[in-house]
Image 1 (cartoon, rainbow, N blue to C red):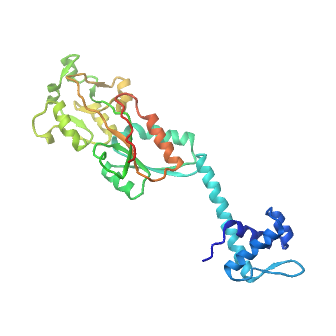
Image 2: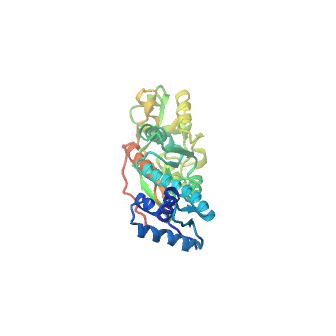
Image 3: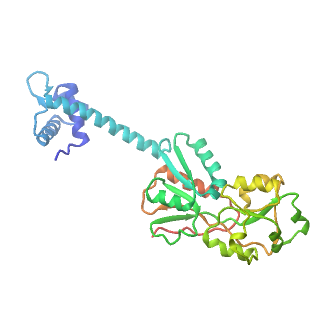
Length: 314
């Protein structure tokens, strides 16, 4: 099997360029005997003569011409590969393919991608927004590098590494002049039953907690009058109707700050928290760009709520 390494190929190219062993050996910083042995070694490996020796200038044989031409291309690619690796290490090259569940996308996508564009504009970023089940399929097929979603139903999967993000409290919000606010400063949870409720699609394991928190004893399917994973749509509907919407305060931060939306103070308070995390395939090497996005997720995630310990790779 032909296994000539890059160093030997560079020696062949040098001899073809300079035409003498002395000049070629000097160019690659070898003694002439060592250089001669290298050329002889690759000729033995290929089983052909690559150069026609004579008292005058050494010239490549037809075999030598082919090897020199191919070697130049291989060496050029090798130099390009080294350069690309160095650029990746310096965050000046590469790409990252990320996925996000709709709810974390509404809070994290814009600040994370904006930061990447500002700080590392040469890194290409591809984003897929869909349900965690679809993101899991893409991750396991290695079509994305990581995803961010609710991890309640992923914790027992041994092929995954999950980096928890801080949990966020899920609250209820309504428009500033909503009639429910006239009930008082502390509003009984039962008062919510008089109005339509809108929310993102809950993980299955949330249903019992939500039903308990709302003191809702009817068919769970009738609790939500509007279900939508686009938080912006939920917000806009809440601003123009009597619907009460659920979500973390950071998802509606601008409208809350401008006092267009108001967080409803319930009694008893809801004890529902998000469970978002960064999900990666266990054992898969992370590129520098992927490491950046993990770092950005940890830094850009709103800091209100609870914190969980990282789940170590098994």
